[in-house]
Length: 311
Image 1 (cartoon, rainbow, N blue to C red):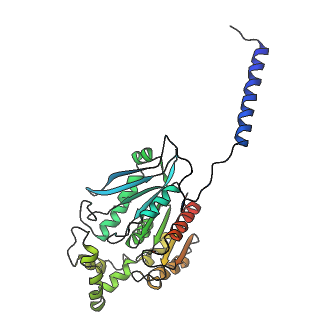
Image 2 (image 1 turned 30 degrees about the vertical axis):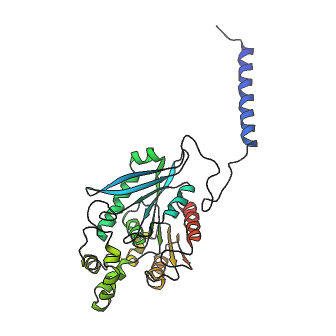
Image 3 (image 1 turned 90 degrees about the horizontal axis):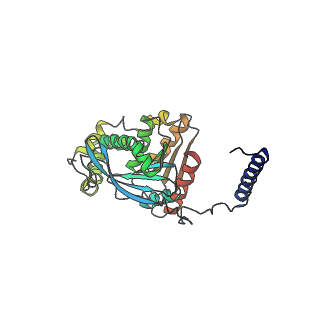
């Protein structure tokens, strides 16, 4: 059956009117309510794609690393933050992971090989390899589809030894978008101290049973021996030129006795500036090594910086 020209014009006019009405409705619609992800829960939840938590394993050199994904709600795609703990990882920064999820980041937290029940044996070199394995894992199509994640926007966020790993891995892998170091340890400094008999005795207490108990496959002298043998390779100051092109955030605690800012933070910040790192920023909070008194300030600084520089 043929439609008359008048009928066609009427249908077209109706379609235009419907489209105009839809545009007007969208223009007059209330914008989604804003909220502060650092201290507030989302005001609305996508019932079809709500926030979730998944327990899984990340493969690394044939071993299974225990991991958790904090998946944000909504269709995404969500940028990805890999959260790296320290040595051995008593402070897991779960509050930061939760805040990052509320801010729309898909967060992967995992334990290195030989740490806290993960398979394999722990070493500093192995942990650096584990970060590479985690990067490959989140860039896989399965991770992206399951957690509605954006493999093109990946940030490394590390605390203490994890800060070293975040920066060292970013220096090795130029596709890492951003790196954040929180009370980061320059392991090269510990390595040089481990070469000195007087300082080694002091370090031995710190790297002894209290710190290494949750680690597997670590002989008593192994951590200090590995640090001493790799003092130059583990020196983050030497890696500053490789980090100069990327956004980097260094956060230190002014009262940190483990990685004092004058030894671990300030020399690295100066080296990045000397290397021409225009997108490197540094911040010192009035806090200890775990930022015990500044958790809200820490989360706010990290999230605001990530949202500005890494999305």
